[in-house]
Length: 238
Image (spheres, one colour):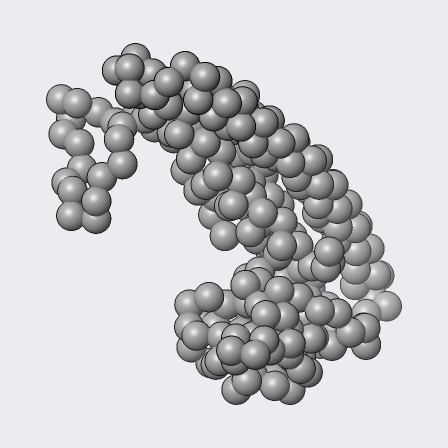
């Protein structure tokens, strides 16, 4: 989170929105561990349903609190963990070439890394399938909103809707279309991240550098790993 989780206490009873400004619900309570850290947040949704979310899904932006979708955080984790396994495997191979690791230990570690990598790739495929479902939902919403827009225009043309009501409705539909298109775009970016991760071979990566290290020059470009995904709202809870 952008601020300490203790700040969440200031938002009890206050509205929660998604990344696009849509109102989702209000914070009603917390789960707090013995050290005082907020681990979960209870929220009452606009439909009256109560749900519990991990505290990591909330971001405090000045006076506003935003709920981040769990699937977005999962994609970010996968895009960090898979390259890390690649780096470890490469380092292990280099140690073997330098005769700094016994062959039997090499085989054991390699098996461990391969198992972890295969599991992460399976998780990535499962997550990618979930993203597909959310994209399909956005497409369905966009079709419905476009249909609503056309029917509204027809009724206005034949004089069954007054201008004031029409303007109110048209603004709501336009907002809905803007949000749905933005969410679909973000989901498609997540899908591309996962696809690149699943299709890519083990990359050649440079050794880890400390925070003070300078970036590589243009004469010695660094091999590229998948970029971390841009942090989108998916409204439903796990």
